[in-house]
Amino acid sequence: MGYSYDDQNIFAKILRGEIPNTTVLETEHTLAFRDLYPQAPTHVLVIPKGPYISYDHFAAAASDAEIVDYTRAIGEVCRMEGVTLDANDGFRMISNAGEHGVQEVPHLHVHILGGRSMGRMVQPKA
Ligand code: DGP
Image 1 (cartoon, rainbow, N blue to C red):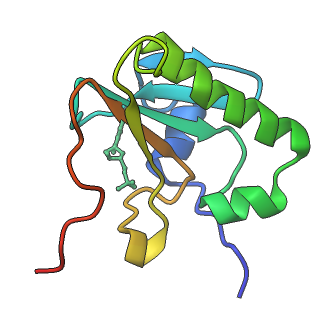
Image 2 (cartoon, protein in one colour):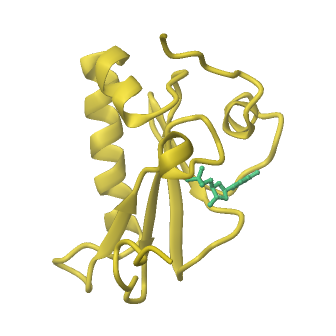
């Protein structure tokens, strides 16, 4: 069983310019844009431009250049949004994967959430 990327997912369409987005940062290998349904004053999604489904897929298959670019872009977005610890009270980074992670869009994305306390990381099981 390997990784099977669906190039009809919403973020692939955003990368192809078929769906508009509110871009926060674009680099050679990375795009960051505002979540359509923000759950905090800062809610930015950061995605690699390459066809990766999840963080584990990206970590295994992406080039060193893509991984460095993505990692630095995430930090840069935090700085641009003013949520870094040298400027503010911090943020939460989330990357959901698959069914157990409750991932809606099957293209790797990190959520950067900040501007308020995000509460406990995981809700207690009902
Ligand atoms: P996840 O559940 O981790 O796969 O999160 C997917 C996120 O993508 C969710 O917070 C809502 C957001 N989203 C879904 N469709 C769109 C879209 O068309 N544009 C933008 N900017 N965000 C979207």
